[in-house]
Amino acid sequence: MSERLRITVIGTGYLGATHAAAMAESGYDVLGVDIDPRKVDALSRGEVPFYEPGLPELLESNVTAGRLRFTTDFAEAAEFGDLHFIGVGTPQHPRTNAADLSQIDAVIGSLAPLLRRPCTVIGKSTVPVGTAERVREQLHALAPAGTDVDLVWNPEFLREGFAVADTLTPDRIVVGLADPAGPGEPPTRDEEVMRRVYAPMIEWGSPFLVMDYATSELVKVSANSFLATKISFINAMAEVCEATGADVTRLAEAIGYDDRIGPKFLRAGIGFGGGCLPKDIRAFMARAGELGVSDALSFLRDVDGINNRRRASTVALARELVGGRFVGKRIAVLGAAFKPDSDDVRDSPALDIAAAIYTAGGDVVVHDPQAMVNAEAAYPNMAYAGSVEEALTGADLVLLLTEWPEYTGLDPAMVVGLPSNPSILDGRNCLDVGRWRAGGWTYRGLGRPNA
Ligand code: UDX
Image (cartoon, rainbow, N blue to C red):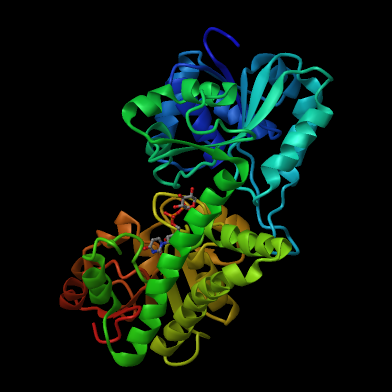
């Protein structure tokens, strides 16, 4: 192992690019690897090919300092790395609910035969339980005989929009080992390697948790399942509030004071989306089925169902607010990203709702501060506005679907003259009702019919 750790990070999406920059920031020599030459070119110039606050600065300073480079060449990576982190995607399989692990298999298939020096491969991607065991066998089968290589599983918990802080100061470091040391036994070599690479984070105060592969894989999917369940719980309450005239935002506030419940992830609205929560709960259910424990996770079907209903019921409410038909109505949609501070539109409830209204005949115009390019690539036929004002102009109904500060900070009285009908449906319950009413708007939130 080199004096100064040499690290590769394979896969340079939200996870990998951030991890590579954070490792370089920690003082290591880092080589980012991707099969997409356009990404590699952009990153090599110090440009981040997606929106993530703080990452461009971190990337640029480490590229300039010479600690961080990028390549498409696996031979170079194999030759370079003491540690190889894998951060490729594990999207939902196109025809099933299961995770598609082909990118992980491709990385091992490319890297393992080229390995010559002692190294550790570290999986960070979110995977179904049992994957690490299988990947380890694959690694040993494909690496040249006698190569000193082992596999560690080290799930990543970063949130888009907070990726830099979550990577530099993680709230925990989870390390899954093939053979963790028992109580009272000295740490294994793999554990020592992981303690060394994460030393700056451990010193900062991140808890370091060592466990077996299966537990580490399950930590990640169970954490995301819990978060998804919390959101769907409050959205289920929103459905009940709609039926009873209660206010889900007051309800959330009141139950959140119980510190066993806590106030976070209780924002009712159009529901969760993104590249993680929806596909992770589906992959978890699929895996549970394979393991013969599908009953244990049957509640996740409801979590997914509640979440999908949010989109349908928001479309239905919007239809009601424009008098029963979308045809001939101009609908301004503020927000396309699945959440603010991201340009990610994967499984975005905002974009899904916009597209459903468009398909139903609405004259939809979408605005987003960062996600326009991705939104337009997904739905090229919808109209996109260059500014919030342009989107609002002439609207019969405004839907606020992603709570960007650009929208929550709007002065309702200043923009009330722009729409044909100043009526807003607040899909994230993020606006000050009193202020918007006082500004001349008709306001409707979700799960608070009388607010
Ligand atoms: C999530 C996990 O938080 C992170 O730990 C994991 O590593 C990856 O998946 P992310 O997908 O970036 O991160 O988004 P997150 O902040 O969790 O939000 C997910 C979705 O839930 C968003 O669409 C958001 O708008 C929605 N949400 C969140 C709600 O609808 N209500 C809430 O109260 C919180």
